[in-house]
Image (tube, rainbow, N blue to C red; front, side, top):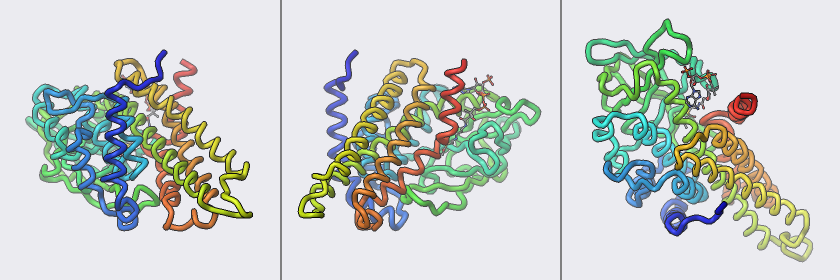
Length: 380
Ligand code: CAA
């Protein structure tokens, strides 16, 4: 067993850290306050090769893999969780399924644009009546000649204000059992009959956008079906196994950021004639934060490593997301507590960390869904 990063992974992590602190961190609080989408930060990340992490080099990707992607996401999320989720969804929910399930023609047409960051990618599964019960979706796709006509409304689509390309799940067979009869479609933003509608106003990751999509007779070429017609649900699930590693990485980044801020504050803040870092009450909090983050991070990197090896990683991804998201919330809460009243103000980053942490327990499968996935593996 070897817990060391390779030389290449260390270099990538260091480069990501420098990029995140130099380019992404400045303005992160202001973008959060004004709900300004981090499109410039996404393009700058793409220029570093971070938009094509899982895309083969023949399509212009950097093909550095999932462990490297996790390391990058941890660093970027330390600086800005909104930029972090934008990159996570682009790589793991949009590019990865296209690499795995796409035809040669689909890959040639779309992957170079995604790898270069010319196009931003998104993923659309959820609807008003379909959140945790993903197979309950009703948005429909009717075959008509050499295309499908999409009708319905999707919800909770990350990055939709700026995304150019969406993987959309819709029902192609009404009579089929729930999870069967769902297909995956590659939808360009400019397809007629497709509009990005209402943008949500959120508690955290406020610079990231989360929108409704409306399909009103949107014609999608049959050549843009991803995988087989009627076999979209397993693609959605397989993709989320990877996406959950990205969100778990995000949670580690938030946990580390909150801990770093708490350490800085504890060394500066004086009470009872000494820095509060000298009190055991504070030290025990910092120790717990550090230990829990380390344990969760090992689980995240294990899941990413298994995915890189092409081995099953669904349970491990769920374990990683469950533990990392709980850890992010624990660390952010404790960091606010260490800051006392100051932590409740916008002036310190831990307030944003606490708001951002919450979503990691909800999107790409709630904590309860991660437990359900893990329990199914345990009982199988
Ligand atoms: N990989 C591949 N295939 C899988 C799979 C996986 N991990 N899990 C299930 N499948 C397949 C099954 O083998 C089965 O295939 P067959 O039809 O061939 O038998 C099919 O999918 C149905 O499986 P289940 O019966 O297990 O499905 P289910 O209805 O019981 O659902 C669930 C399982 C785990 C609860 C699933 O619905 C789920 O993950 N729910 C949470 C959804 C979610 O995470 N949503 C987040 C959306 S994205 C987002 O958050 C926004 C964003 O942009 C960030």
